[in-house]
Length: 224
Image (cartoon, rainbow, N blue to C red; front, side):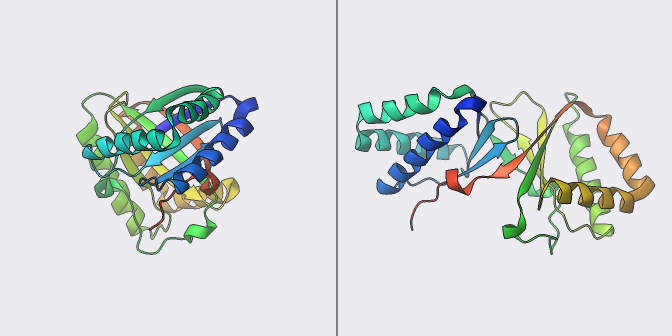
């Protein structure tokens, strides 16, 4: 994942450059898909779905090939336009952990209804990973027993992350819809949920929440 912070006033220029890049990627048959999200505090998350670390070599090779096809000067000029709007850029590796994610058989929302996303980053007390993952499995069981229809997707931070760190990824139709669903969920769990939440929080040394939306206009999928 590339986490790119953009100066608010320069966001239009940044997005214009990205859209120009998308056109070029399509013209030259760039082979790697990526999905882009924008957060409410001017970060852009660019998610590359690499299967493993070997995919990083393929990712680098694809960008080198694109630069050759465009010409070095044109490629660097476009990169400079994007960089001129950026305040910082971090690359991190995350693993999607299906074993500690809650994935209901029938979700409350259809994919086309989703318009709001949340990322809850939780940094753990070092050495607490096994206990935290065990508690995630308890959350799965408790959610399932109460018929919860909103999932939570759990990612574990790897290289590039200040670990140990995990991320809970959730979504709703809107901020209001998400808040209403959360309130209903916590009411349904009652004292069981409160007790499990207390145990979970005891393992967390720092937490940060980001909110935002999916940006199909800044995302790319190669033609088949």
